[in-house]
Length: 274
Image (cartoon, rainbow, N blue to C red):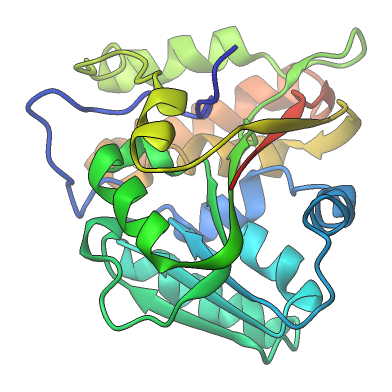
C-alpha cells in the first residue's frame, strides 16, 4: 500500500481549507483517539540515529499527540496546526505533562517555512492529506537541515479493527450518525494517494518503511463517544440543537452493547524520507 493517511478522506479537487473543519473537536480528540504507542518513539529514534540534540517539526500536530510523545527525544519540538483550538489543547497538554521544550504555532502548513528555523526531522501524522501536498512537501524539503529526515506516519487512531472480543458497534454508530447528519459528506478525490510521487518530486529519496504491529486496546463507552466527536464528519457543532438527543442515543447504544470494549489497533507505518 502506498504511503497515505488512513484516518479520514480529504477534500482535494476544488477544495480549500475550512477553518471550522474540526471546530469543537480538540478536547474530544485527546480523549477519544487511541494514543500512539511508546514504541513509536523508540523505533523512530533508533531508525534516525538521533542523540537528543535535534529539532523536530510536527506539521498538522493537532493536540500534540505525536509531538509530546517524541519531545523527550529531542532538544526542541515545534508543533504547527491550522486549528487554533488544537494548538490551545496542545499547549495545555504540554503543561499538564511538564514538557518544556515544545512550542506551538497556529498556521497552515502551506505558509511554511514562515520564520521557522531549519529542523532535523519533520513529521506528518494523519495530517498530510488535508494539505496542498506538493506545495507543503517542497516547503518541508527546504526546511530540513542537511542529513535530515521526513517521517510520514500512516495510522488510524479513532477506531481499530475487530478483536474477536467485545468489539465496539461501529456499524450501528455510523447508522446513528447518518440518522442525524445524513450520509458522510462527499469528498472530492476520495483517497488522495500518490504520496510517494509527491515526496520524490519535492526532492526526497525513499521511503524506508518501518511497521509497528497491532496491539490490543481497551476502550470505555466514554472513549468511543469522544472518538465519534473527534471526527471532522461528526464534530459536536454539526448536530446543532440535536446534540443532546444524539448523545443520549449514542450512549444508550454503547451501554446496550456492553459499555466496555476491546479493539485491535491497525498497524502503524513510518515512511522515512531523506
